[in-house]
Length: 420
Ligand SMILES: [Zn+2]
Image (tube, rainbow, N blue to C red; front, top):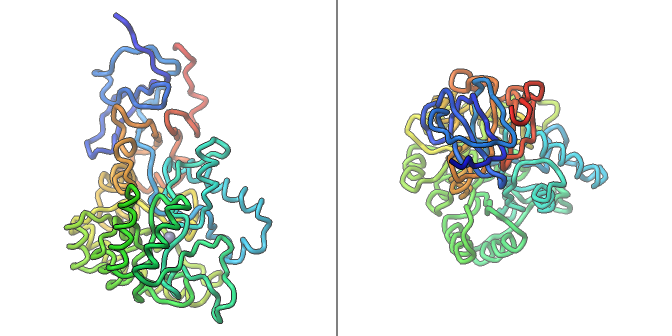
């Protein structure tokens, strides 16, 4: 009998594979040299293999690497809006590198940056120049003049975001051209603002932005170029409905979603990404601009009620934190916020794995631990099904691996020697 060889074999795992199936108590995971999963399942069914490295997880929980569908790695919530203007650009790059690593070490092996991060960071991660999650990026945010991504200061003279993450377009023709520019510049996702927002000085979350007709033109344009998801920043009720009628793939924030919106999202298979980490982060009034503070206070309660109702009514969710607006490196705390509003822990785990992978259109290779998929995984020192909030503390995420390569390891002292 020939014994096949694998590069990594995990034993003694309690496997939650991301498909929604219950935990497998004594499981193994086998990974080949290319970082692909050869086997994930009960130890009793595991093939006999010769492994280059074997690790015994001692009954700890093995999960797919998580996917945060809404981050801003180019921003740091601890910095004011003028930080980038007053800091040497090289320092800004290193600061961003640290945030990438923090995010990876929090258990996020794939992140979708919905603007603010320059494309070079994605290339740097791909080339191994910096440790970070694999990245999808929107490059810039599309909105109307005076909309959520119009960063002109009052008076209209200068912009306050040096990262130039704005893409202004005002008509059906202009959004087509803007979409072409974004595709040219490497966008993996087109982000549009169908409402105003919290952090923008000129508008309210209830203001409407990009229209349903404009979204249809964007869809036509991206479909002529291989297709991409469209993510709508949408907070007020009418703008959420415009996004859903236009046919976006995800409604980001969705704070003001009503029953009509929940029904439409259900019919279209649209994901909600409610970014509760940002909503429920305690506000520090002294460090916020007054207009921002007032808007946030008003919307916390609205969000709690509407998102709980969407969960109750069976809407589809993908995990997204808006890290950058809230703190980086505690991404999995989002799962406990979803559970607080009524979601089951298993559904919350799927929102952060299989469902987020589906939203990013990478579910053929990521999001679950199944044979043939890329071996992105995390090991938790806690049971997320009984204490999901503990996952939000990075010290409880003891191992993180991307494509079969272990990139964080707090179990080093337990390492079993090769061949043991
Ligand atoms: Zn955002």
